[in-house]
Length: 88
Image 1 (cartoon, rainbow, N blue to C red):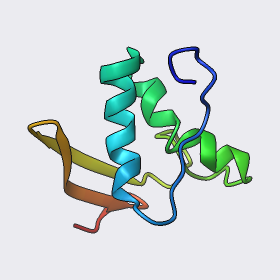
Image 2 (image 1 turned 30 degrees about the horizontal axis):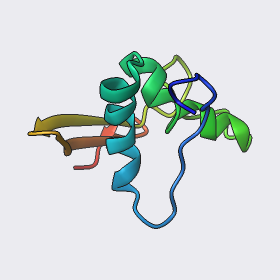
Image 3 (image 1 turned 45 degrees about the vertical axis):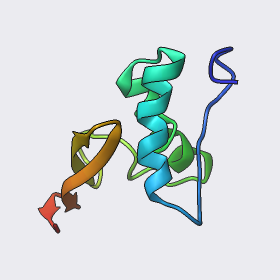
């Protein structure tokens, strides 16, 4: 689906870390840009269920953010911000 550009949303309620990894896999295996790949796990799902205050970095929105470092081919969360305040 990704290679045919038919994928809009990735979601998971069992393994949340898989969402981050899926964004990098879309970039690496389907050739997607990183912003487009990240939107499949952030902006697109938020919009789909009516959460208009989150999912992207934009003026007036929540400002939830993570900083990631790659360890081999595995993305590792190094820092997190919730509503613009560092949480981790």
